[in-house]
Image (tube, rainbow, N blue to C red; front, side, top):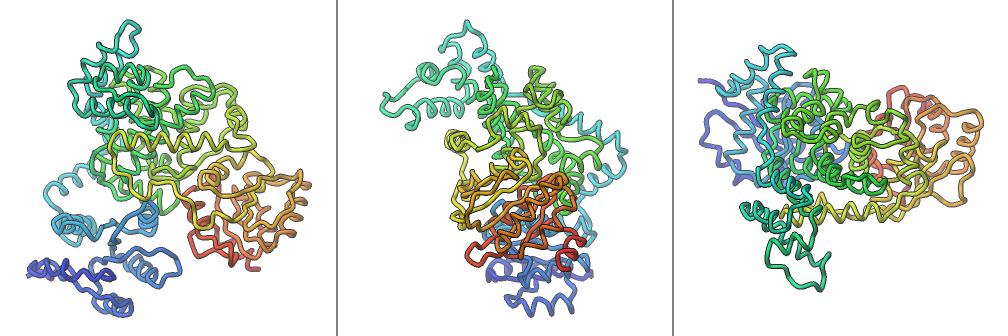
Length: 577
């Protein structure tokens, strides 16, 4: 008889009642302890096949040593916790966990997750379906994988007929509200959304309640009717269970919807004529990721892990592993749905810098708007598209948008409000992780220092959206003040006069810890030595890491708690010397 699979559980939640349900299973042996010391002993003497650990918040937590031992001995581990915020899931992926299980999970689904991970690591035989999938993926050449993904893209269900008909009627100047109401009536959920929108207290306070779809359409107008129908339809596509750990459909939907809303706001700001096209392009810009998650789960799991643990841009890793990417696949879906060429072009090229900024950002096209909106959604930390990197754009873009000096709070507030309105409209349960809340250290004063005031737009978007007080300054002079934290943004080498000014500024504020954002330039090493405490992040900026570092800063004690940073061993050594 085969030896049972040994599962070591650091059971901080004291869930003996849960694990007792598996005592009758001869193929699994659960060894539980609430003692960290005993857990280390079990790990050293019993050598488990898999470990279940509570979420480990900080690098200095003693439980982090368990993760180090697990990685060294190639023991797979799962995080099990009572809740799962976006921060927790992302950090768990980056730590190397293979899944994140809630303590409220059903026993059947719990065992299914355990078995799947054990099968992937050769601890138990895979199921017939898993074996067939493994054999299929292993037997395929690179071009065959691309063709398979493209074929699956064709099979994605078309936009529902009801929505396609409504969009068509709304675009026809000869259509009446009665004409548009007819197809909507055939979809109860959509009818409910339209009526709810038209009776929104926030927008139509004091107006009589609308009872019919015709009157609802008249009240909100054709443009908002069409937008509501499109977002409703797209949400149905996103409403599936995610398969790849780290690819959270809930957070993915938030990111996609936020990108669409920002696209619409930017389009309105620059006078772009088709606001509906801007909204839809933004909402669907990452649709290709769902195709990869659905049909190449093992490959996409690998892509997510490489991007997370090696801190690479997801788009680049997709090209390395699959020889294609989500933008291309999303563009193919848009073609199949016979979307206008402008929308298809925007979805297909939203990561193509040259196509988005053919003239350096002097003029805008829909791809430009989607490109910028995608990164603004990341800077605002709205949901997750599975990576958090933001890419610099031409200065002309920020100047044209009016983001070159200050970030208009009304713009950020409008995005947050519309996102909240859609959550209410679609009856999406909003988790605490998605709600906008003030940070614990929001009263500190931050100095953002750079040789280019437009270089740090993402940093300022983040700080403004999270209610931080900050001052932006350059070599023209720094307002006199006692700053709690300094953020240096060095993407390019400093000129001698700039270097002299930055050293002077660092010396005057040497007691203020600093965060350095850089592109591998050497200038930061000189200035780092002046400050007593620093953190370093490379460009392109990873907003998740920046968010974690900012949140970890304690202004009262003027120090960071231990969180990950992108500092190289050479930088650490130089600073110590």
